[in-house]
Image (cartoon, rainbow, N blue to C red; front, side, top):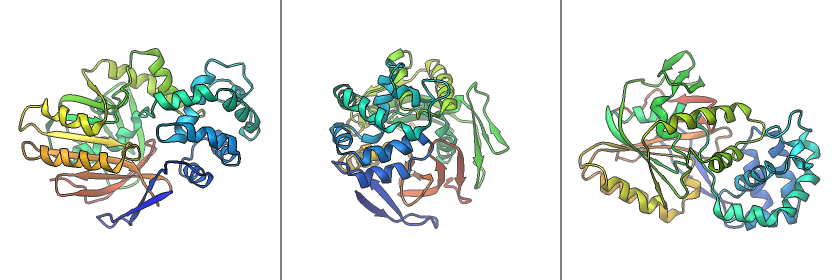
Length: 353
């Protein structure tokens, strides 16, 4: 496991960025499980996998990152066609009155080894995809910090474009409210209140290696499989958000963001402001890709105002993602948020121009 130290600003502690090694070890998997709370079933199965060399072997055959997420999603995706299997009985997403997770180990092992070829193929052809629009309770306040009233919005790792619809949801941060959309996003406000204001998004562009078609039943099923088995409320919210996205004009561009970001920016009128967002995609980019994206953004700032927004899961925070913005003078850390939007903790000195 590689840890890269980075100094933060605004009095936040020094953080460590967790980078996945090429070949995962049981130690890394247990670390992943410690920082991915919220599913009693997966919490138990992490230990099952870490203690079993054959299951670790299958995990490491998965091509794309993050491998644990893809393994669990592949199993849940396939189980939708095997409701009568013994393992399906442990999944609250598939059956009523699911069995206690403590007994799931043997059934999980048998199923994974029996479906090894299909799981590895999914890990080669599918990727983790954004499926939680409630992360917008953090993204929207960061976008507001740009100071732009009217701008183009670009989302890296966009999946089905859920984040690109952030101005079409309704919000509640504690007692503060904004918006009137059909999808209501409520969160606990732990820090300073966000600076709410009206915005006009001129165009919405989503970059993704494999964009999700919100009208495709199979693509929607994959997004559903990426949600942890116990999270029924998230599944309902995903269905509602996909309906909102279908009503918007979104330009989805397939390919490596290190290559497509420049293409997307070149399509926009010179001088028009742009906000570029990323959320939980940094771990899926190589250092070279990150450097290229940084360079593209720096070059674009010679012809237009460009503001960057970042929500990334980093260490040593036990429970939250780091919130950062960049106006061209460097990344500034402005708070923390729960990775599924359960709470938002903004610093008092938010980065407004």
